[in-house]
Length: 317
Image (tube, rainbow, N blue to C red; front, side, top):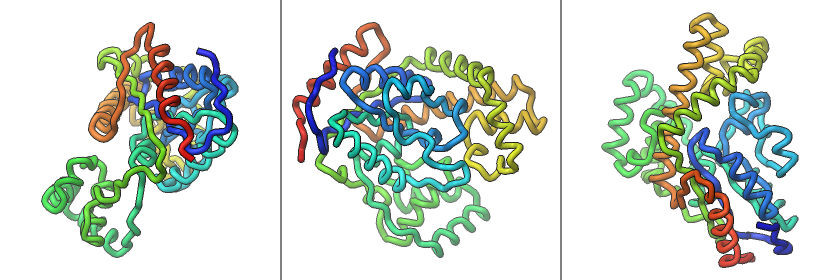
């Protein structure tokens, strides 16, 4: 499909490409963006960090030359990076893309980043005293006790919160106890009138697991251990976001002599498969996604859908 010149575009509908890790989002988004004159805004909570390249499967420099990318390498590994900050910086990138008459594509598997645009965000203020008390309760009583407490106080929030994530459980409880409302009430309609088309890649589970295993081998062969050594040598391995990132934490275990190389690879593959399952659960439960299965006609079908969507929803300025 040829590039369509639609002239200056502000507040255009937003096109999102989502799906689990290793599903092929990067390659698909490159084809779509190149075909319709677009640029890519990454929605990946790890690709924002500088120095974490191989382990986060960042687009290559060649791919970035083919189609401009945004929201990659915008933070240091010791930075604290919030969804609010992501929304603000990604929105600026999207507005810049539109002002140039290009089509923005929000691409990635971090559900909270995508949700900031599809559903909007209205963060409640943090209550430091309440947060400290809840974190003390967490240390004393454990995560399961806190999750049970959230289920009792706020069943709606418990149904959409990752109850294995202590930070999110504590945050949901903080809002309920400090604000007297559910964190679900912070989920507003989009902060602009823009319409959103969310395209999802649905790869059969056996094939996805095969892709994940193959990508793990590629990462370790392409220099993941060298990236991990740089963090290790800097003395910040434990303090950096890499220590909580699949692949890097397993590489650190290998460098520390806690695992063999085979055990590190197997741990990365297993954790990635589990993460991919959680990603699919998020997008199926919280987003209105138009799912596509890989196939010979998939890209052309999606391009036709995108072209029709943009024609239906011209600039809403």
